[in-house]
Length: 145
Ligand SMILES: *[C@@H]1O[C@H](CO)[C@@H](O)[C@H](O)[C@H]1NC(C)=O
Ligand SMILES: *[C@@H]1O[C@H](CO)[C@@H](O)[C@H](O)[C@H]1NC(C)=O
Ligand SMILES: *[C@@H]1O[C@H](CO)[C@@H](O)[C@H](O)[C@H]1NC(C)=O
Ligand SMILES: *[C@@H]1O[C@H](CO)[C@@H](O)[C@H](O)[C@H]1NC(C)=O
Image 1: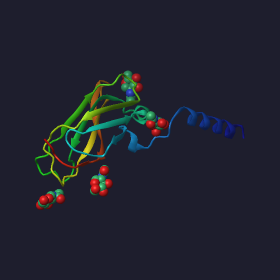
Image 2: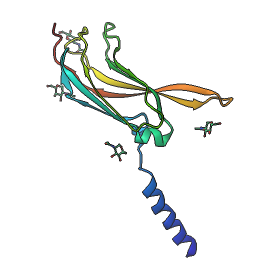
Image 3: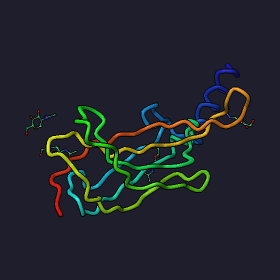
Image 4: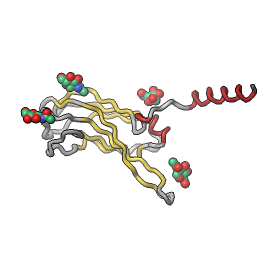
């Protein structure tokens, strides 16, 4: 009985101090606004790294791209939107970017992608930088000049 009460108290404490994080949130939770846009439009990208930090994927670098991960026609290389280096332990990121005048194809499946570069301990304890990606589907409505 005593043991049971102690276990309940401990689990309440754990709930109070840590978020419950799904594995899907491990590299960051990204929101993009608006999700339909053209070259020249201003788009706001926000990322929440609360769960990334908690699960051991705190970002060392954050690179944001426009990408066509599936059915890429071979002429759709990733387009860099921003490269950012956060202060240690940062829990969020938010910025507005003007969409570059890239060569966008009308029926390609575009995504805004966050590449989270995070440090892990290598086999001898030295840091190894691994990369995890988060994809947010978007529409690029037209390529304008
Ligand atoms: C970030 O994510 C955490 C965990 O899901 C959540 O508790 C928190 O409210 C989020 N922060 C913002 C600013 O959305
Ligand atoms: C894109 O559109 C062209 C014709 O406009 C079509 O031939 C091609 O199959 C389409 N590609 C995809 C991935 O839908
Ligand atoms: C990595 O190594 C450092 C120092 O040896 C240690 O403090 C840290 O907890 C380790 N991280 C992981 C995820 O094992
Ligand atoms: C992209 O456009 C299509 C057609 O208008 C729409 O159904 C879809 O919701 C849009 N997707 C996003 C992510 O805005």
